Structure formats: C-alpha cells, structure tokens
Image (cartoon, rainbow, N blue to C red; front, side, top):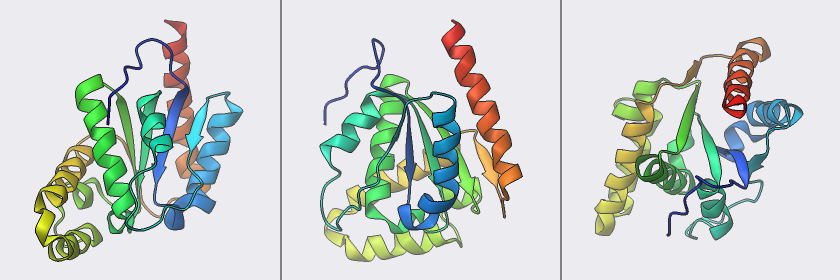
Amino acid sequence: MSLASCSKVCKYDVILSFRGPDTRKTFVSHLYNALEQRRINVFKDDELLEPGKSIPNKLVNAIEESKFTIVIFSEKYASSRWCLEELAHIIKCRNELDHIVIPIFYDVSPSDVSCHQNSPFAESFLQYEEMYKHDLEMVQRWRGACKQAGKISGYHLQECKLAFFLLPFLLFCQYFDLLHLN
C-alpha cells in the first residue's frame, strides 16, 4: 500500500470507519447526514465486505485521500477483521502522514479499545490469536492499532440519544470550519 500525501488536494474531507451491522443504520447515518448538510465531503463505504478478502483499493485510497477519519468504535468492532485491517491502515496514515483521527467510542470505553481486557475486544483478540496462529504478527498489528486509537482524544458516548451525539457533530463542524478559515 502506497501512502499518498494529502497535503495538496484531498478527494474527501472525512472518511467514516465503522462496523456496518452495529451502527450503519443508526448512528452513522445520522452522522453522515449531519456532515453532508454542512457540505463536508464524506466517504462512507456502504459495500458489504466479504470475509477473507483484502480491503478494497477504493477504501485504502479513500483513507489516504481524506483529511480526517472518524472511527466509530462499537461493541463488536473488533469482531470484524475488515475493521481491524482498515484501522491499522488509518493509524499508519496518522503516524506517517499526520492524518487526523477522531475516535467516537459508541457504547464502549476507550480502555476497552486500547487495553483489550475483559471486553468484547479481548474476546475477539483471543479468537484471532487462535484462528491466526500462523500470522500472529497480523494480530499484533491490529492490537497495536487499537491500542493507539484508544489513546486518541475523542468522544465517549454511552447509551447515547440523538441529543448526546449532536454536540460532537457540531463541535466537529466548528473545528472543520476553522480549518477552512486558515
């Protein structure tokens, strides 16, 4: 995977990274609409990804060609190999290109994501270690990406209602507007 610099012109302002079955029709659809209404160019992958397949180039390119990534961590996020591969690439772009990552912890805590102890994330990683005994380096890469992402300042939404997640959207929109003023 090549890392294209986004310092010139980005194709997208923001990409949404999420586990579809958990949040696509609820939280993510509201977030997407709120950002689009503010004329923020958003990439949201609506294609179902087949187990065992590589992340499509379209998705990798969208990450590299965006200014921000909003990662929506949900309870079953780590149960998706796709999400973990995508997150590993997002963190790589953050580390190598200063890509801005904004995590939203949706009914999970940041420590669930970063520590993997006694949480659905821990269960998923135990299963991956068994399933991918031959490629523990891949599992460690995913763990490392989760650990880094869980330590990024973001929004922690527990049992959220519409009013609770509108505030972070407004704050993000204000932040985005400030960037365009410079």
